[in-house]
Length: 160
Image (tube, rainbow, N blue to C red; front, side, top):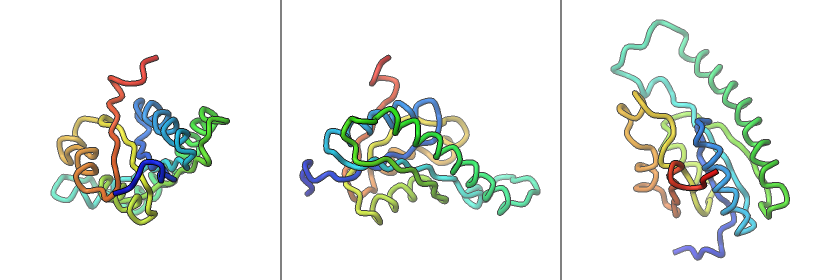
Protein backbone atom coordinates (compact mmCIF):
# COMPACT_ATOMS: atom_id res chain seq x y z
CA UNK A 1 0.00 0.00 0.00
CA UNK A 2 1.32 3.44 -0.92
CA UNK A 3 1.77 6.00 1.79
CA UNK A 4 0.50 9.47 0.98
CA UNK A 5 3.86 11.16 1.50
CA UNK A 6 5.17 9.14 -1.48
CA UNK A 7 2.89 10.89 -3.97
CA UNK A 8 5.07 12.31 -6.71
CA UNK A 9 2.59 12.62 -9.58
CA UNK A 10 -1.09 13.49 -9.88
CA UNK A 11 -2.77 12.33 -13.10
CA UNK A 12 -5.90 14.28 -13.96
CA UNK A 13 -8.09 13.36 -16.91
CA UNK A 14 -9.89 16.32 -18.48
CA UNK A 15 -12.51 16.49 -21.20
CA UNK A 16 -12.47 20.29 -21.68
CA UNK A 17 -16.05 20.54 -20.39
CA UNK A 18 -16.89 23.36 -17.99
CA UNK A 19 -16.09 21.02 -15.10
CA UNK A 20 -12.53 20.32 -16.27
CA UNK A 21 -11.11 23.56 -14.90
CA UNK A 22 -12.65 22.95 -11.46
CA UNK A 23 -11.23 19.42 -11.37
CA UNK A 24 -7.79 20.46 -12.66
CA UNK A 25 -7.55 23.28 -10.12
CA UNK A 26 -8.48 20.87 -7.31
CA UNK A 27 -5.87 18.39 -8.56
CA UNK A 28 -3.33 21.21 -8.69
CA UNK A 29 -3.95 21.97 -5.01
CA UNK A 30 -3.40 18.30 -4.20
CA UNK A 31 -0.20 18.22 -6.28
CA UNK A 32 1.00 21.36 -4.52
CA UNK A 33 0.35 19.78 -1.11
CA UNK A 34 2.80 17.01 -1.99
CA UNK A 35 5.12 19.11 -4.18
CA UNK A 36 4.22 16.73 -6.98
CA UNK A 37 3.90 16.89 -10.76
CA UNK A 38 0.49 17.51 -12.31
CA UNK A 39 -0.14 15.50 -15.47
CA UNK A 40 -3.27 16.45 -17.40
CA UNK A 41 -4.56 13.94 -19.96
CA UNK A 42 -7.31 14.00 -22.57
CA UNK A 43 -8.45 10.91 -24.44
CA UNK A 44 -9.82 11.06 -27.98
CA UNK A 45 -12.41 8.27 -28.25
CA UNK A 46 -11.70 6.06 -31.27
CA UNK A 47 -14.58 5.71 -33.71
CA UNK A 48 -14.18 1.94 -33.90
CA UNK A 49 -15.68 1.95 -30.38
CA UNK A 50 -18.97 2.94 -32.02
CA UNK A 51 -19.22 -0.30 -34.02
CA UNK A 52 -22.82 -1.36 -34.39
CA UNK A 53 -24.01 2.24 -34.52
CA UNK A 54 -24.66 4.08 -37.75
CA UNK A 55 -21.58 6.02 -38.77
CA UNK A 56 -22.02 8.08 -41.94
CA UNK A 57 -19.59 7.70 -44.81
CA UNK A 58 -16.47 9.69 -44.02
CA UNK A 59 -12.77 9.16 -43.84
CA UNK A 60 -12.49 7.95 -40.23
CA UNK A 61 -8.65 8.01 -40.00
CA UNK A 62 -8.58 11.63 -41.21
CA UNK A 63 -11.32 12.61 -38.76
CA UNK A 64 -9.54 10.91 -35.85
CA UNK A 65 -6.26 12.61 -36.81
CA UNK A 66 -8.03 15.99 -37.01
CA UNK A 67 -9.61 15.43 -33.59
CA UNK A 68 -6.21 14.52 -32.16
CA UNK A 69 -4.59 17.68 -33.61
CA UNK A 70 -7.42 19.86 -32.27
CA UNK A 71 -7.21 18.19 -28.87
CA UNK A 72 -3.43 18.83 -28.76
CA UNK A 73 -4.04 22.54 -29.38
CA UNK A 74 -6.78 22.66 -26.75
CA UNK A 75 -4.57 20.80 -24.26
CA UNK A 76 -1.73 23.25 -24.82
CA UNK A 77 -4.01 26.20 -24.02
CA UNK A 78 -5.64 24.40 -21.07
CA UNK A 79 -2.28 23.36 -19.58
CA UNK A 80 -0.99 26.94 -19.77
CA UNK A 81 -4.11 28.23 -17.98
CA UNK A 82 -3.66 25.72 -15.17
CA UNK A 83 0.07 26.46 -15.01
CA UNK A 84 -0.69 30.17 -14.55
CA UNK A 85 -3.27 29.33 -11.86
CA UNK A 86 -0.80 27.28 -9.80
CA UNK A 87 2.31 29.37 -10.34
CA UNK A 88 4.26 29.61 -7.09
CA UNK A 89 2.03 27.13 -5.24
CA UNK A 90 4.45 24.18 -4.99
CA UNK A 91 3.58 22.05 -8.01
CA UNK A 92 6.83 20.83 -9.51
CA UNK A 93 5.52 20.83 -13.10
CA UNK A 94 2.39 20.77 -15.23
CA UNK A 95 2.18 18.88 -18.49
CA UNK A 96 -0.57 17.80 -20.83
CA UNK A 97 -0.89 14.72 -23.04
CA UNK A 98 -3.49 13.60 -25.57
CA UNK A 99 -4.15 9.87 -25.93
CA UNK A 100 -6.46 7.90 -28.21
CA UNK A 101 -8.69 4.92 -27.41
CA UNK A 102 -11.25 3.92 -24.83
CA UNK A 103 -11.30 6.74 -22.27
CA UNK A 104 -11.30 4.66 -19.06
CA UNK A 105 -8.80 2.13 -20.40
CA UNK A 106 -6.39 4.85 -21.51
CA UNK A 107 -6.56 6.64 -18.15
CA UNK A 108 -5.84 3.39 -16.30
CA UNK A 109 -3.10 2.40 -18.72
CA UNK A 110 -1.40 5.80 -18.63
CA UNK A 111 -1.42 5.94 -14.85
CA UNK A 112 -0.16 2.36 -14.63
CA UNK A 113 2.45 2.60 -17.38
CA UNK A 114 3.94 5.78 -15.99
CA UNK A 115 3.75 4.43 -12.41
CA UNK A 116 1.77 7.46 -11.30
CA UNK A 117 0.82 7.65 -7.70
CA UNK A 118 -2.73 9.01 -7.74
CA UNK A 119 -5.51 9.80 -10.22
CA UNK A 120 -7.72 12.80 -9.45
CA UNK A 121 -10.78 12.99 -11.67
CA UNK A 122 -14.28 14.38 -11.84
CA UNK A 123 -17.45 12.42 -11.39
CA UNK A 124 -19.16 14.47 -14.10
CA UNK A 125 -18.02 15.58 -17.55
CA UNK A 126 -19.81 15.45 -20.85
CA UNK A 127 -23.17 13.74 -20.66
CA UNK A 128 -25.87 12.51 -22.99
CA UNK A 129 -25.47 9.81 -25.61
CA UNK A 130 -21.85 9.03 -24.66
CA UNK A 131 -22.80 8.32 -21.04
CA UNK A 132 -25.71 6.13 -22.12
CA UNK A 133 -23.52 4.11 -24.49
CA UNK A 134 -20.36 3.82 -22.41
CA UNK A 135 -21.36 4.29 -18.77
CA UNK A 136 -19.41 6.26 -16.23
CA UNK A 137 -15.72 6.67 -16.96
CA UNK A 138 -15.03 7.54 -13.31
CA UNK A 139 -16.77 4.35 -12.18
CA UNK A 140 -14.64 2.21 -14.51
CA UNK A 141 -11.43 3.91 -13.41
CA UNK A 142 -12.21 3.61 -9.69
CA UNK A 143 -12.96 -0.10 -10.07
CA UNK A 144 -9.94 -0.95 -12.23
CA UNK A 145 -7.04 1.41 -11.48
CA UNK A 146 -3.99 -0.02 -9.72
CA UNK A 147 -3.32 3.25 -7.88
CA UNK A 148 -5.49 5.37 -5.58
CA UNK A 149 -8.26 7.35 -7.30
CA UNK A 150 -9.82 10.47 -5.87
CA UNK A 151 -13.09 11.56 -7.45
CA UNK A 152 -14.47 15.06 -7.19
CA UNK A 153 -18.06 16.08 -7.79
CA UNK A 154 -17.64 19.51 -9.40
CA UNK A 155 -21.19 20.49 -8.48
CA UNK A 156 -20.65 20.11 -4.73
CA UNK A 157 -17.06 21.23 -4.27
CA UNK A 158 -14.99 24.26 -4.84
CA UNK A 159 -17.71 26.92 -4.84
CA UNK A 160 -16.98 30.33 -6.31
